[in-house]
Length: 113
Length: 114
Image (cartoon, rainbow over all chains, first blue to last red):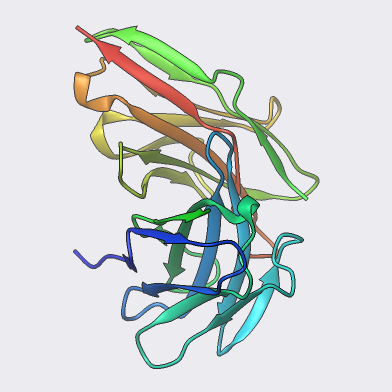
């Protein structure tokens, strides 16, 4: 069964450093998403991406964040200068079309020290 | 905008007992509703969805949920739980007409014991 793959599973970084979280969406899907879950809190939407541009973003997704589809298979989330409060589990998701089910990866746990 | 309330943060239950996990939502537009499950150290897996049609929807692992528009609820039920159902359960809502974001509840931790 096709699945969304995320790497790494755990990323540790120093405050102020840049990190890139990587995702390989399901191959025939056209819409891609990032969510995050701070420990003990709910899953929060960050951004959606379609046709090589952002289609929707939340207030959390400020100038420190960016997304990119650098090739035909990867979808990345970059945080330019990490803060302690960026520590969270980051989930990538993809869907075939905008109205269909979003399938989630296993997540990347980001720890900012 | 939509929001989701999961009133129970933790639900302990004995094996083979029935369980109901509550979810209420608020929205001024038509919505799609979802239940996702997160097993320890894993990602979010779709249990079931309501998009339209029958208000009683059946999902994987014997779970079902009923959409109640008048009460703005989408409670998840299972008649007999197993130890393996121990997990975090998230209710989510999104607009049926616009937007892409899923809005999640805070989750309910289901703990099944022998």
